[in-house]
Image (cartoon, rainbow, N blue to C red; front, side, top):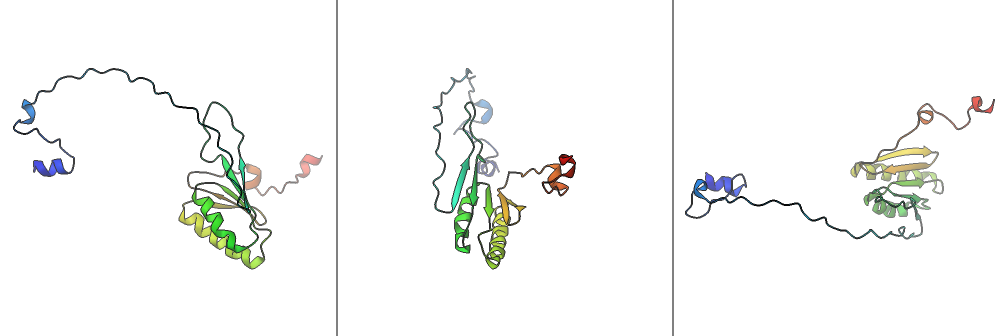
Length: 162
């Protein structure tokens, strides 16, 4: 029974010829660890554009590291064949804004179907920003909408014009 517990890591192995109570256990002096000095993180340039995906990097602010979502990729595909590049970028965990306005209607339907499957498979989310513009957000990132958007605010409020 003891061997099975040791095998699964539920018990510590005993030294040969010594029962566990008879082992010499000497106290160990504890001391604070010396602080580890880490080199400053070099600024990374924005990912190079591959023709149809452009990156928008948040400005660097000293004092803290950039969050994982500091880069939002803006995509304006011209044909459905560019879906693979979109998938590769989104799989890396980057949020994306995709403008499907340059695609034909049948390609828009195919692209939306593809994007829906992509975000479902990666546990992300897809939201319509306007007309044919969509925002893909990876798992762990939320898109916060203000109250005007949720109420159907169209951008022209007559009370603001008075």
